[in-house]
Length: 267
View 1: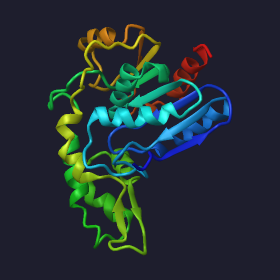
View 2: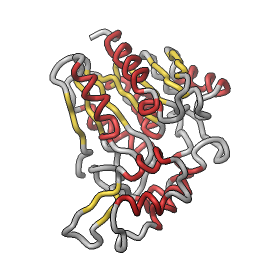
View 3: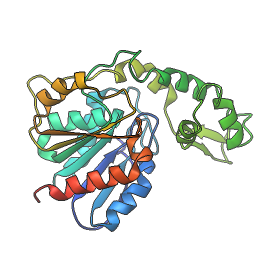
């Protein structure tokens, strides 16, 4: 099986592994990873399956994603600080619960270990997939035209820019534009991605930092019992002014929180 695509920066210090959310890729963390490396951390950015440069799989189930990430971590030289945003946060939680020996500390970014009702969070994603899938890759002139085509469905320019990071051009191919997202498989599994498959009888007793966006609906007071039951050493920090993409909307707070957490762990 083809291995996950990763990019690493930094040569010494605590090892931090970053998992992106739905429609993302490891490069979303590039600026933050370089800054962390400059302050004495080894940082690995992972492209999850069906995203970025990683292989496309015929399914997209959380246990399978977690198993692939665990396989990657098992090849490293020490337990890591595992950081996951949104979908990547659920993957990170499952890795910590099922392979705790691989995780020295866990950072979960704006997601809870629950099944989300479609009306609560994530409801735009179906529309996003449909809009990306409907884009005419054969007739597409340039990235500006792609942005204009998505605009009626994806109203926020920042979200369109995020999605379009996965649209790439290969002049030698037909069509010359393609998505680095397995949109068909992701569309088939969107309902499943709202769930969280609880491993029976498992807890992760290591240190956990939970970062929630103050303007986001993904983590609320009603979710705290589930968080504490599975992760009893949780410290929840709400980042004021940030929405769901905490790392891009409040990068200084995110960077300070994650590096401070990584540096506080025993080595």
